Length: 86
Image (cartoon, rainbow, N blue to C red):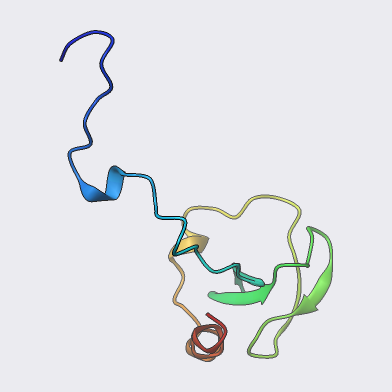
């Protein structure tokens, strides 16, 4: 490495993404609830009551989810619905 010269990326994943292929803007996010990872609307804020894509009622928690909760199984119905929206 020579001081003053930029580092060369070692992987194509480290390069800047092309602006000709922007990433899609998603209107949903994943939320652990009821023993599984479900999809909810991006508009729901902590403390809000709403529904998952599979129809479960939930209140978005005000505290951060634990690492263990993020390991809960993925709801297949939420996953299938989310795939159609990407």
